[in-house]
Length: 195
Image 1 (cartoon, rainbow, N blue to C red):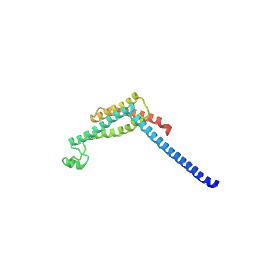
Image 2 (tube, one colour; image 1 turned 120 degrees about the horizontal axis):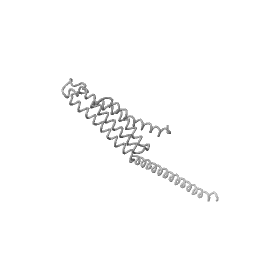
Image 3 (cartoon, helix red, strand yellow; image 1 turned 120 degrees about the vertical axis):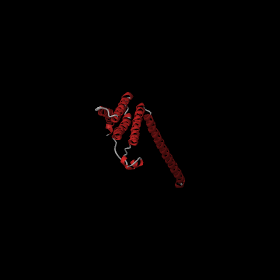
Image 4 (cartoon, one colour; image 1 turned 45 degrees about the vertical axis):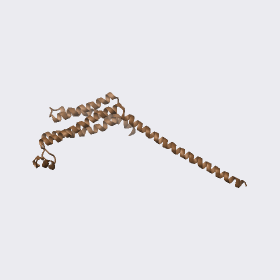
């Protein structure tokens, strides 16, 4: 009797425990999902805040100017090739008059070297400047870094294209490296605890 009477009670108790465990598991799963969503939103908010920071916006301004400057030199190199009829590829020379124009020209080469020098220096600056912006520098100091680099690159290209008296180009190059080295050192100091 007690066995028969206890049977259904045990089943009900088991079901209740199972249902409670299922509810608890479901609630735990929902809590984990909610935490994950909130965490993702927190990361997104952090990224949005970072992108809206004054220093990063300042960096973007100077970075875009530098990229436009590189495009300008690339276009100028192409225009000089057409005007001087000095092509780097035989098929281009044939298309514009004949294989005799598959040749080098001093002015084209000078412009091309200025463009290559921009690529060698501006691309590292884009990385360093972006990471440096995330380390929380003051806006006036960061702006000075970006402005000095931009002015030095403009002077360096002008010295190349106009064949300015030495050591104008070398001075512009060296001074342009100062903000880059400064940013690199500050980034290293900021991340060395994680190395």
